[in-house]
Image (cartoon, rainbow over the protein chains, first blue to last red):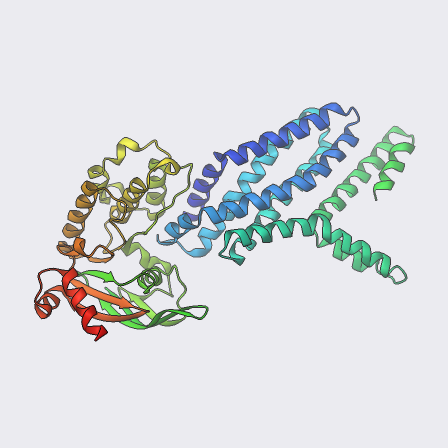
Length: 233
Length: 237
């Protein structure tokens, strides 16, 4: 009971935060301009995906880390009340992730509903929701790793760079180095451990399904689109 | 009633509390004093289980603070620096803590709330308040739920003279009701009419634990501040 109450209060506090409002507007402008300018909405959704894969994790992890540090005194106040520690921590997580998911859904969801198809857009929304939640939990992890705010934010930035850039680089190097060995299974597992990589995988799977379905239903093979899709994979 | 048993608290290599054993009884009003970094706040935080206890134990009303969080229902705490979510109004903040505590409206003690006239500022956001007003909110929250134990960390720092007089008279009234009040303060002159016992700490140890009457009698002085200075001088010899 108390957990829901605290989570709700934190949620409303965050929703009124200027940065979250700015984030929602930014997402809205990006998605609206990307989807509105490109006539081929499959292509447009893909460009939007690339933006989402970078922006959503970055904002989620940075905002959550800074929020936790800034509310340390408030957390102390909550803990001096008859409330167990776990429920305070969980409600912070719930409040933060719900707020970020909501602002993503408003910022990206509305333009997708307006300009794209639910078929391709839906997977993008799923990706955004999961990335928001996952990187919020990373933020909570780095916020308790250190008492020092600057250090905690540093750890957060590193986590983001690691999953957005470094991790794929390492995999690529491994792939070239071990090209002579049967490493497909291992590589797939390793790639699946990166949330951003996993999101990309998921999107490609759904995307291919869509293409196949459309090709079958229209009774003609969409040569350029399939060629373009296979280039991505 | 709070019993502290052989409590030792270390932060890495620094020993904040060194084998402290002490007990506080209901109806007492205790001043924790000592130089900066002597372990006063650490002791308070241990009682509230904000610091994890590794060695020793603390019993509040007979229950160990390690076992269950429920004992905190009997404690009202006013922190040294209260910071609240910036975008929440005073009304919201109070409502949230009320919701968490789940105490019926009729049992609430709104005396301080009215005395500080905070209801006029209900719509102000916590982030825009001055330090003193934030302290007032903290004080209101500490007394609101009629707790048996009241812990005040530097209560009058930052309050204007009028507000600190209101707070002081409130503390005395609560003490006379038979509650346990623990105060830390650097302003010794303020403690004279409030406290019944003095605990002087230094480097994580309790050096003096005496009732005020005894202390004043022993040192032949009329004020707490003078007698503490005398004790300190004696120790240096």
